[in-house]
Image (cartoon, rainbow, N blue to C red; front, side, top):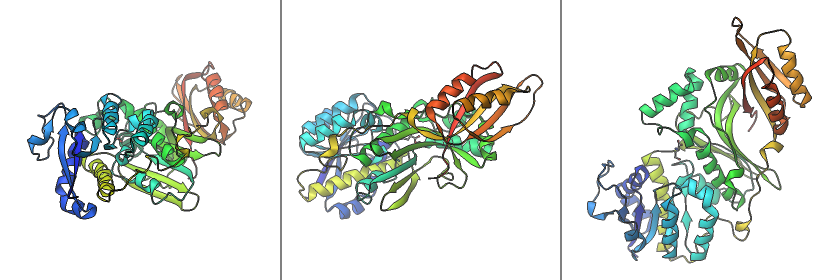
Length: 435
Ligand code: HSE
């Protein structure tokens, strides 16, 4: 075999990066595959915008069917993203016996099981390195180098946009709205960056990592998610007074019969290994029972890093095609047990430590009212800060707790928020002290 032919559906940022790396590094890739990897066609509805890459326009088409129906194309790359037509194109390509590469985290998180089952039925591979962590090869690591391990603990900074926003808040105490406006103006964030800042994007990526780690589908809706939009510079300052910074973390832990899975802002000690992962960088901390802790760090988005990850999948598939390998590896790299649904532990049943910021009137007895309600719900306080006194105005009362049950915390806060001495909704940030 002298060449492997590839079709790309979707010529946006990632499509352009994928095409660029396959062209620019064609010689290196050839020597690593043992054949040329050629992009035969690229489909996109917009053929006019400048993507900043030189391209032979004769390979462009507006019809995805020209790729799916082309008998010479062995690998179809889906890069249009989202939950719309992408799935139909992937299923149609598999029906035609083509291997598929995708970066579509939303589709994998919400319809992964259907796609993995279809790939198995059609005897084709489905690869998705670029779906989590952009250029970071975390999927390959979990399927390959870490595959001897049981995964005990995964902690990730999986969304670059929210990490950029939080970095600016942690360093300069800018209010959330000001950072978002700047990030949008500079083109770092989408306008509005809803799925990035509300935790959905990170939860999609976490669902994929959990499926890979434990070998089965996850009900995406069972993953608890909460975004960064309620955080204020005051919370950042208080967190720092306690020796913490605030990050949006995606967490998964093996709890025996179920998996703990959640995405929300977390206070981590300033000397925590993830505390210095700043700006648009992503990082994934993975702990295996034999390998111990591993850390993966890099750019989680962008044309070149994400193009690099998509191309890695194309290269791996091309190698298998060139070797004439029969029977693809199952997408989640698990045999047999691959259909077993993974149970997610209900959020209410988890225990952890908390930061609370109450807005309260500054009057004798207020602190004892609040701490009384916490005590009634079995929530024990470790530290308290109360600062500033506005004439007749509310003051922030900040507390850190020992480990408490999430269910009790929700109940206690709903009682506290109704007290006549409390003037605004209480801000809750969960605290992680160790790894
Ligand atoms: N929008 C994502 C982020 C990158 O901000 O990290 C693509 O997954």
